[in-house]
Image (tube, rainbow, N blue to C red; front, top):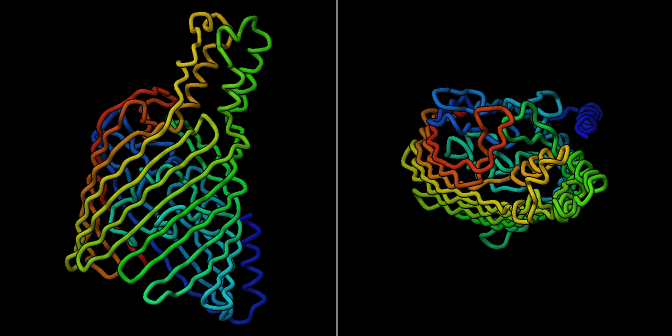
Length: 420
């Protein structure tokens, strides 16, 4: 899809006479360090590595982006944006964040075709542009859970002034694919969303903004198909397997991810006082698969502005629903005598705990805009990881699928954010 969009951009640039081209860029040079040798910090679920105690990491928060805005007529413009953020597999497709043609026949209507920002969050359009927000990093509890950043498809936006207010509604449709991993796996396999359809509603004034989003999609993943096939074969060839593992086939089919439906619902708000800004997002991510039963998350942040300085504090949480595999009455001593039985049990545990995220974070920080295009930020996070909710953090040993880790982590983030 992205290659087709890029060709469309090139062709549009060639056939339309004397387009007006604007080039801009943004980035951040940052460092992260933490105090834990058990929980490795990572920016989101696409990252395969982790930052551990006594390490000072540049990769997790360093980014560089370039954007081209090509104005062809009063109604048509083209946007192309590439971003480097230490992708596991860096190529043209993974670096291309935006590539769309926009047609706006009047101030009320706008139609876009191509690769656009995946409209799930309050900061969807600039989650990688650090200069655009006060924090040293976006709250992981919301933004780290879904690393998918763009949508290959179409969207239609309607905007209407209502006195001192502005109302907008966006309907979008498409698909996307992004790497997702856990447990320090050496690679991040692609996780595909198909038939994405969503509605984003926004009402704002000069001082405040309220947004509601609902997105529905179909999961397209063969990640656990080998496990599904393996358990189905055990049920066929092992005598009395249903007594050893009750309803095993029903269970594994309910845990399958392929062709399952998912939904993301969010409510976000922002209010700007004279010297103080309050920002909050609440979200729920749910599928009809046992593997991702649901993740509830949110944050509340306050930012105090004084001159070129901003001081902020935040609280954030993420809590996932889990299915207790041991509650269905599996006879583990008998299963251990079945060739491949314990491996199937361990694989099922892995699947059910892949999106096990239960944590709370308190953050404080400072931003200093010492130049009109450059800001310095520093932020301290204290995260409490509750029992069974640590898969956002990487273990120190590759493929260590320990499910019940809990503890506390302190992390320090510092960076220079800039745009040009």
